Image 1 (cartoon, helix red, strand yellow):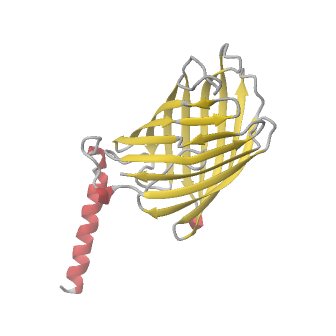
Image 2 (cartoon, one colour; image 1 turned 180 degrees about the vertical axis):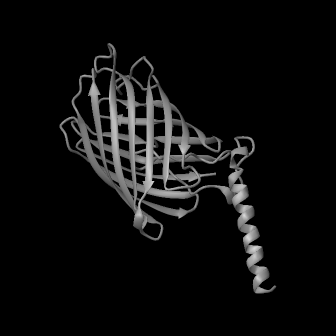
Image 3 (tube, one colour; image 1 turned 120 degrees about the vertical axis):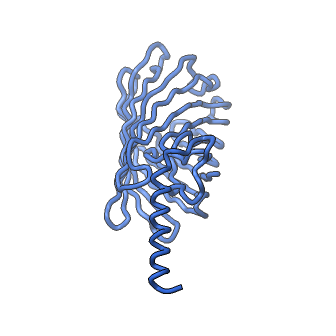
Length: 266
């Protein structure tokens, strides 16, 4: 094969690949996205800032903490809190979030359960900027003495990210929650706001730093602020390990929160 022929063949492959990428809207839960067209794996963990990217149509992704530990007035340990995602469309995924086992000094048992739907507005497959909208509902599944309420709660999450020079990425999130107050007598609102800065460190090892704030209204709680950092390590294109630690900056925040986990997709 001559050099001109090789260049021509490569160009044809590039055009064909671009055309196929532009047709990703045809894929859905029952017509999965081909492996060679799947976007880079993106997770909502270990940082608080949710990802603006969705799971490819027809594929599943499990994000799970092996263990989470909170130290404050009393210690709390959560085992295997998980987020199971399924790609419904090229820019929509459905998420099931649950806490199978929570242990504190006074109680133990099943924790909260959420159902979330993420819709990527822009940037899922190209560009440096991505934005998503994710409404969710929380079901009253927590056992007694674990913050249980017999009422439904919910809210909406708006995450965004922007690629910066030298492989830096800045991400931010606004989350409006409608929650029961501490006396479980009525609803109030909380506004979660976050910003994180991340970058590859070496090879498949990446790191980030993050600020998390929560402004509460009619919930009987003051402003919550914490800061933390974490690392991620990609074992391959479908498996990622992570760990993170956060420290409370306000009296209302937990003193220390730490976690270690794994994410993988199929």
